[in-house]
Image (cartoon, rainbow, N blue to C red; front, side, top):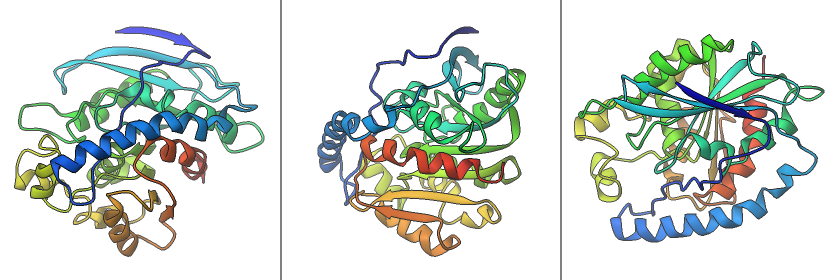
Amino acid sequence: MTEFANSSDYCKTPGPMGAVERMFTRRALIGAAGASMGALVGGYATTKHLETGATPGHLVSGSFRSQYRRQIVGWTISYPPRYRPGSPLDVALVLHGYDSDHAAAFSSLRLPYAQAQTIGGKHLPPIALAAVDGGNGYWHPRADGDNPQGMLVHEFLPLLGARGLKVQPIGLLGWSMGGYGALLLAETYPKLVRRVAAESPAIWPSFAASQGANPSAFDSAKDWQNHDVISHVGALTGIPIRIDEGEADPFLWASQRLQELLPPGSVHFEPGAHDAGFWAARGPAQLRFLTTGL
């Protein structure tokens, strides 16, 4: 395992998050992805206020060879201000979106700044944030042997526990593909999860729809059915959920459906699209939600 730590330098690699269009066609997907990248650049101006008066805490990053993913994966832990690596804090896993990686949560989405502003000290209880590379496999076991969900539960959580973090129960935060993955992980391991905060979860209405825009999302119609978070939403009973959804997001329909199925107040709609500017702006509210009850 390799590792480095710092308290102020962030990975500068942009974290492009896959976008989709309303009718789930490949041609429009390309246009929407371009719009998302443009919004990503503008998103820094949108979220610059997060940096004002907020000094992030320590970042610790490393990598390990995952048996479940059959490759080396990178990871990062973000500690709130005044807490050092090794502090016995509660933790929330952060699941990244499509075509992204563990670093995007701490660069593109600026979560350390939201963390510094909203939790610890006189504000809310401290919580660590931990992200790891999940690839583009939609956070579930795949036919080719890649199993990012298994990696989270059986490798990454033990790694976090060995570093002194409290790994049961955990919080979950994810955006786009990661928002879907967070809901799926909570449905699969409900006793492991304390709260889920999802931003613009990328949920497909059918296997055919997923294939029309993102053929890599599922292996087959049965694979989609087995991992359809809407049809299995009953498994979330008793787990507090917060979903933030942009009113111009192509996945709006899914959050509207979840609003009907989840307890009142679980889904929040605001102006915005499927882009990093929207996700970063929702960070403080989602972190406040995740720390409730600690």
